[in-house]
Length: 93
Length: 125
Image 1: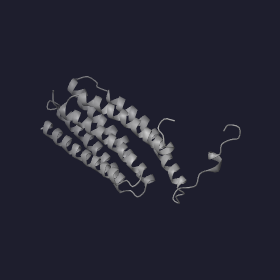
Image 2: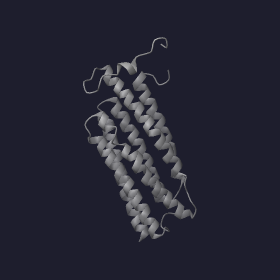
Image 3: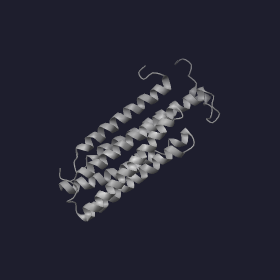
Image 4: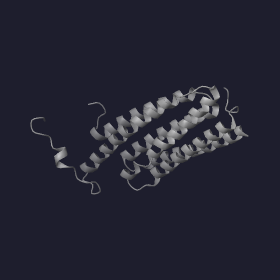
């Protein structure tokens, strides 16, 4: 009973996070400007991180946690570099 | 792989509730990113996912693993602290870049730059 409830709620959570990633991807494609695309990429990173954590709960394995941490770190670096590029035209001056 | 089948009922219900809450809040934030009108209002929407959504899913995950392994598993706090520290920094950098670009283009829907704030004091340039 409890396993059934948990597996269905994990499935529903994964579907919702997948829809959220689709929304972010659509915004990434339609723009309209560069800052909108960077914001959408940042949202996509966060949604993917949450999706990996949900996978980890489904499998019952803490391995996915490290992947989620790596995605969080890389997302921060990517967004900062892109915002710096928009501001100055160069990443490292 | 132990699986989550041997969780007690209360832990399974709480974990499912927190995961659903976090996913729903994240979905609402992403729909806001899709539907809101201009860039400066769109910046606000995804922060739902990076605050309440992230916190709920991390609480659900920490609860699940703590009960499964019968010891406190709190390494999720690493992600929470990191995301809470970095999200304001990235979004402020991004919005300042967007504001700079809009002002360069002379866009009419952003306020003009503050002359006192942007003036370079004599002698330091």
